[in-house]
Length: 83
Figure 1 (cartoon, rainbow, N blue to C red):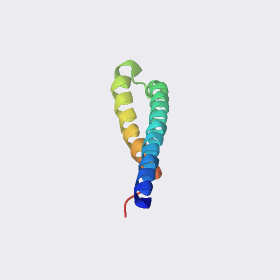
Figure 2 (cartoon, rainbow, N blue to C red):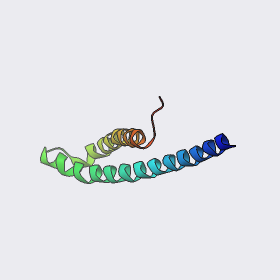
Figure 3 (cartoon, rainbow, N blue to C red):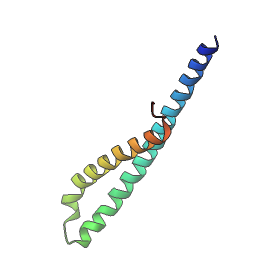
Figure 4 (cartoon, rainbow, N blue to C red):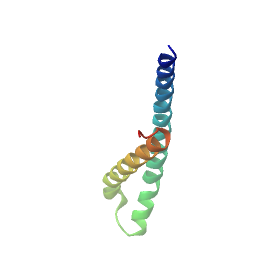
């Protein structure tokens, strides 16, 4: 019976950890994507490039790459590694 309680408690804790790192990563990804989308046109203007033509693909690519990195970094920090 004690083992069953421990397994159930671990399942609840693991589910909470998954929700916590999922929420934290979504918030950070949205903030990072917004910052990239806000600053990239200014950077492109500084380099004398047209920000209207180059920003949409660059914002999407950079935000997606940053999102994957943030997601896995937070997941690694929150979830215990096996072993």
